[in-house]
Structures are given as structure tokens and as C-alpha cells.
Length: 203
Length: 143
Image (cartoon, rainbow over all chains, first blue to last red; front, side, top):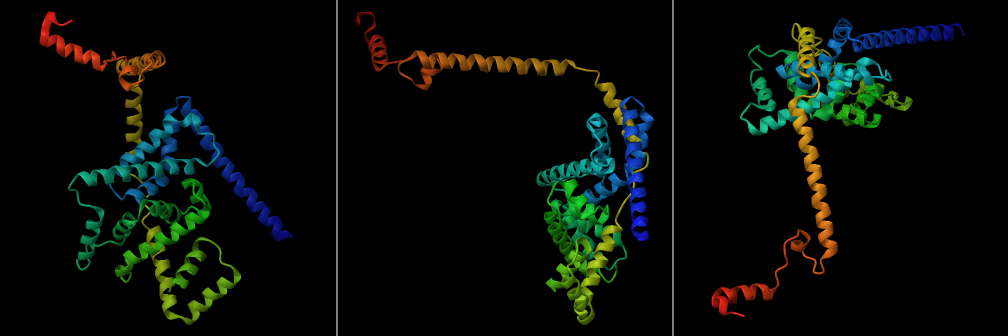
């Protein structure tokens, strides 16, 4: 009985902390809508890490990633008045980040089709050949392996494994059934294991 | 090997049933290859979680705020080009409406319905073309 009470208390605390967080986000948004630039700056400070993790996971460490990151906050700024607080602000921004990253991937594919730029696959094979020379960094390699995944698998892997969202939250963000998220997650991880297997000892 | 993969992923991202949990434990205990595969899966997951990059390039916030400021300055309301764009859309819609009305009128008033008549092109009969050829040949004497 006392254990149950303790559990209820913990849950209550959790909810109140979450509500406080949500309330303060809404306060910041209201102030920003009323023209307080510093409130919007606080929003950027608060969510830069989360947004950057998503975008770098999706696009890799590129100049476009930074541009897409800026675009996420600009888009949010322009539609702030439509934010009703149904979901947490972090989740809302992550959704924008995923959508803009997917758009950027499509644009990148079009650009690659019409240009002679080195495709990602080539860069990865170069990394493979550099295996002996200590150039290879695990992080870099994993990042490249992530970029080899089909975007629909990549988005699930990034949200679940990089951003640590639960499978349910991932499903909500991507507007997919949980079953689809689970199967894409498994397929994505299998592919990653296949790509990274030759380097497993070093990792 | 597929079995251990499926069970491992299910354990990590979803929930195993009691029997599946027992099966996984058995596999990990008795099958060294399965254990190795399970460890690989965990290693890949660990390395993917570690790629989290939690900030953009320095002065990110400043860049966003600058862009917003520029956007606000350059969007003082409806610009001249917006006006032209808006007007041309109106003209286009008006022209299309007139064209549809005319075609409708032509379709309802002509007996012999062809694309030409619908578009208001005068109907040319075989006699008309025949007469014009004969007229050009005989001149005024042709009657």
C-alpha cells in the first residue's frame, strides 16, 4: 500500500514538473508573440540541442544542417500563434525538424542527380579503404552509416536511438502506427549492423 | 540467427512475452553465436546513441534572430510584385470565365457542333471552299 502511495506521489511530481515545463514554454511563446524577442531567444537556447541532434542525425554534419536548423525556428516563429500546446514544444519542433530534413534529403537527391558531386555511398567506401590509416573515428563512421539508411528508416532510428523518444512518441511524431515504427526500427538497425560489422572490433 | 535478432530488437524496443523472455535467456546462455549477435546489436545501438550532436555551429541563436529581423524588415506588407501577382491572377480568372461563357454560348447556338464552332471559328462548308477556288480562277465572270 505504502509502495503504491509512493508511486502515485512520484507520478504526481512527474506530471507537475511536466506541466510546469509546458506552462513555461507557453509563457515564453505568449511573450514572443507579443514582441518580446528575448523570450524567443530563450526558446532557441532551450531547444537548440534537441533540434540539432535530430537534424545532424538526419543530414550529417553539413552546412545544410545548420541552415535547416535555422529554418526550423524561423518556421516556428512564423506560426507560433497556431501552437496550441497539445504536444510538448520539443516534440513539435522535432516534427518540424524531421519534415524539413526529409525535404532537404529530397532536394539533395535532385542536386546529386544533376551534378557530379560525390554521393554519400562513395564517401563511405572511401572510409572503408581508410580503415588502416587511423583517420577513422567511430562517430564519423556511425554518422556515415546512418546516412546510408533510407530516410524513412533513418528518421525512426534517429528519433528512437539518438533522441531517445519512446516508440509511441516516435510514432506520434512521424504520424505512423507503432507497428510500422517497430518494423522500420528493426530493419534500420539490421542495416546499420550490416554496414558497421566490419568495424565492430574497433568500436 | 534471425530468431535472436528478432527477440533482441523486441526486447529493446517493445515488450517480450514471458515465453519469449525465457527463450531469449536460453539462447544467450547456451548459444555463443547468439550471444555474440546480441552483443553486436547492443554495440550498434550504443554507438548510434553516441553520435548525438547537441549544438549547431557557434552563434546559432544570433543567426536565427538576424534572419528573423531581416525577414521582418523585408516584409512590410504587400509589395509591388505581390500586387502584380495578385492582379494577374484576377485577370487570368476573368479571361478564363469569359472564354468558358463564350464557348458555352457557341455550343448552345450552333447546330453543327465541332471544336471550331465551339471556339467561334466561322463554319466553312465544302461549297464555300469550292466557290472560292472557282472564283479565284474565273474572276468576276464566275457566277
